[in-house]
Image 1 (cartoon, helix red, strand yellow):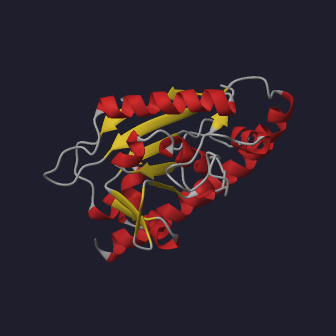
Image 2 (cartoon, one colour):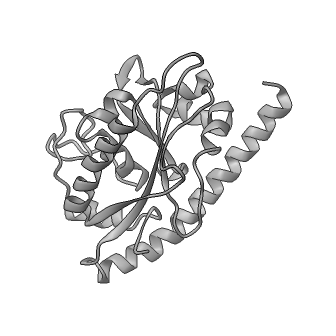
Image 3 (cartoon, rainbow, N blue to C red):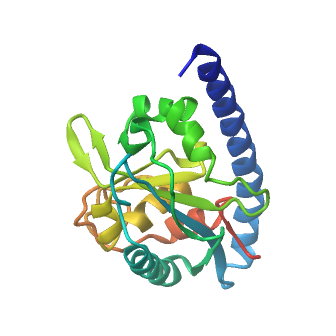
Length: 225
């Protein structure tokens, strides 16, 4: 990648972050207030899943695996957040035909990993993660690996700064990682209790607090339409 492409990707990344932050602030004010009075109404979150592969390799997950994972997440979202999944994109489960760059296949879930948003990986993700005003869907990328200080993780999210999350095949196929990462995208943070859905451990439970439910439903990604 030449210096000009690097500059363009960095500028595009900054613009994306600014737009995401502004949308989150506006969405939080509207969503937060409406959730106080319309707490009983089921909300919606739009999800697309894009599966990556390395050059010469196979897709990291099958359509059937993604469908099963989305079904598990939909059941959790309905029972915990009174929110259901609406799929978006054509197709909403997309086995990306072109090989992904190495930088997009492996992520360090730390500040150094977030900086990839301004490089080749961020540019690649942005080609498939649409930012639709007033809807703000979340795109899930299935990638090879997520690490943190040498430890293998199952997923990662940069919260309000991006409109996508990443999960590994292992994270996609367990019971809670996908919902956990999407909850991060909706501004929820880690909790210490092992029984809480936002506990860092892969053996976490599925409990949430009333405050977590309200906060999730106030996110720009979650709406009534």
